[in-house]
Image (cartoon, rainbow, N blue to C red; front, side):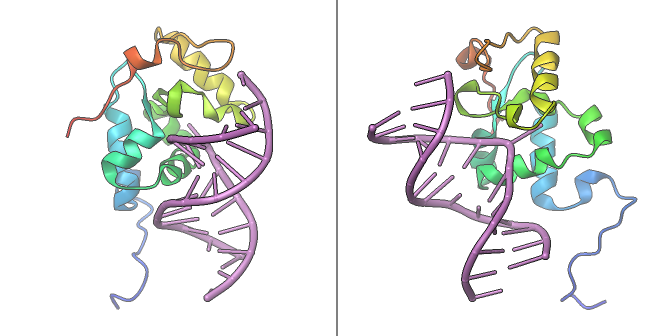
Length: 122
DNA sequence: CTGTTGACGCTCT
DNA sequence: TAGAGCGCCAACA
């Protein structure tokens, strides 16, 4: 096959194999401890990517993926629940966070954000 | 090539 | 707190 072609997408591969950027992002998301949170920006800087790339990947998670990954532990800078702008999603994220003990203010911000913030190990 | 688009981030109103 | 404006960067039409 010509190396010129866009990487073939084997649909039967695990989603982690889709492409490196996504794989790395999802790997980090999967590593966020229960009851802790991290941000798009932190993940992005850690991988030398743009924060919007991270948002794009999480936003595009297939239902199956969303079920297996703690995507809800990723919030925006300052602990803001940025998924609020997507109908339904913000509500679900808050519910999932609360379910594991992470309090969220009525202003859609993670309570004690600084305390609960988790950073991937180098 | 240009233009648009993000579950972003930071600064300043 | 909410918005606006701008930076950022890959993906896509």
